[in-house]
Amino acid sequence: MKNITVRFCGDSGDGMQLTGNMFAQLAAEMGNEISTLPDFPAEIRAPQGTLGGVSAFQVALGHEVYTSGDKADVVVAMNAAALKVCTLGSHFNHPQAHFDDDYALYHRHAIVIVDTDSLTDKDLEKALFKTANPFEELGVPETVQIVPVALTTLTKEALKESGMDNKSVLKCRNMFALGLIYWLFDEPMEKAIHLLEEKFKKKPALVAPNTKVMVDGYNYGQNLALNINQIHLTAERSNSISGLTGKAGPTAERSSYTSIAGNKATAWGLIAAAEKAGKRLFLGSYPITPATDILHELAARKDMNVMAIQAEDEIAGVCTAIGAAFAGDLACTSTSGPGLSLKSEAIGLAVMAELPLVVIDVQRGGPSTGLPTKTEQTDLLQALYGRNGECPAVVIAASSSANCFDYAYEACKIALENMTPVILMTDTYLANGTALWRIPKLAELPEIHPQTVPEELKGHYNPAMRDARGVRYWAYPGMEGYEHRNIGLERDAEKGTISTNPENHEQMVLARKHKIEQIANSIPNLQIIKSSNLQIPASGTLLVGWGSTEGHLHAAANELGCDLAHFNYIFPLPKNTHEVLSRYKRIIVCELNTGQFAAYLRAQFPDLKIEQYNEIQGQPFAVERIVNFVKNN
Image (cartoon, rainbow, N blue to C red; front, top):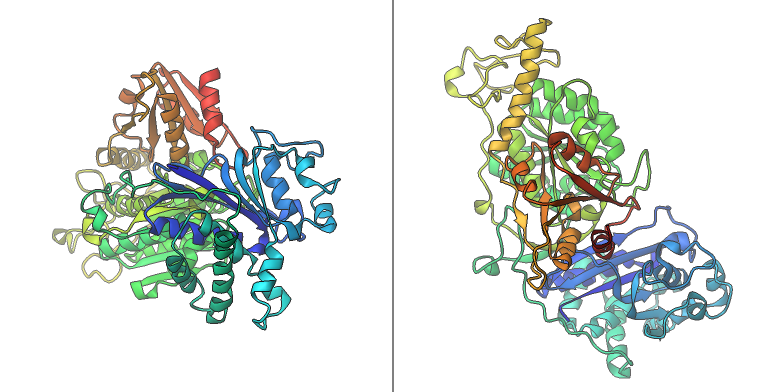
């Protein structure tokens, strides 16, 4: 097969995230492209075995993998609740719901591996089954290959002489399932064991029992010759890895590949930018789902001269970062939608003081606390306009878990070279998901030239001085001869002192606006992604998206035979945006919100007729639904 999708699902305590991550990492190390979807329950530790507590991890792997998959080809269900949620999808709470191709999370020809020990009367009752036959009650088609495996019993048998207590033994069930999946995909167990040893290197006592259970799971499939076909992927190493790190090719093939989550990639992009710019990296942040892993990753990087502070709240986090920017550091703050709201006034201070600041917004379901573990693209208008007064800030967006590195690096470059706050938009899907990533060398990354005040201004510098682009110069404490006071009030355009003059205020508002607009001269032009489906003639239709939907829209465009324009630079837009969009008869903007980017484009280009397709369900797009919309509307 060219590519395939696997879904692991069970209780929150069943280790589905660890299992899925290990499978995805081995797949990446074997040269597969991957895309993953960790699907956490919104509830905190729902009662064991209930529908609300199902945790899942979906992995798509192979060649030309653009998304984490609409539907799974292989499912591992650790209990009755997981089986029900996977079979009914978003309809799992409907008492009369049956398997339906539109809602089920797996195909009608899928392989479904079920722990039969977790289908007792008590388990079925917790999962709200009414009969003793869950497969019949769910209407599972006969074409689905159901593989009953007594995972619990087999795990206990494997560890009966380990001396472990029953609770600890049960925590190893996921490794038996993982071993069985490794057999199904004919993966090398030597690499799998090495990966497990790496995962548990800080808890060496867990290595031996988990290794034994995983190997027993592999041998169970091998020795019993289970009545399912092993799956062989024909994937080659990716030739479509894009971003600032360059496309894979003869040189890239000699590089190292790994799987990486979006939050970790973001943190590493910040570190790389600080190294390239010769700056100390400072992060002032407050824990918030799903952005906290950025703080965790940077807090562990003191060896890279990183300073990370967990502030007492969101406002303190951004204000400490602004202080670090004044002091000459590469200053960053990370948050999600609710925190971006709280930081808005301080971002206005950074705009007025014209200091470089990177604000990372990992979007989630909202408003308010919303669905903290679910994904949306609903903060765009807040990022563009959510500050008082005329307060322009750069807005860019990552579009894959891997290129979170690239756009974190790019956000730092723009901020340092243009003395402005930059808001980097990611989301839950990118942050927690993983993708194949080529580890770049620092030398191949773009140069970063901070807007440091030139030597010739020593002795007569003031904070209003600008270069030919309209970007003010950066001086900071400790630079002798450049002493100054920076303010959050309006400043005189010539002297940099406080001013309440009406004409001066208008002049400064326009100066700050022009400074952001001129950044369009240094960002890439908008590129069209052509459909790879040459059997379908060009349709004159253009799909348009931004941020994390790129993979889904790319797959949909291939199926439809139409083109795709995907935006990473949102404010300012690429200079050729209007020229590109105006070539097409039909423009359809697809977003995980009610149409925020569509509204923004209409405001910029009122002469263009723009359609929109929107979903706000806390889940990524399904490619099939995009295709159906375009064909039927």
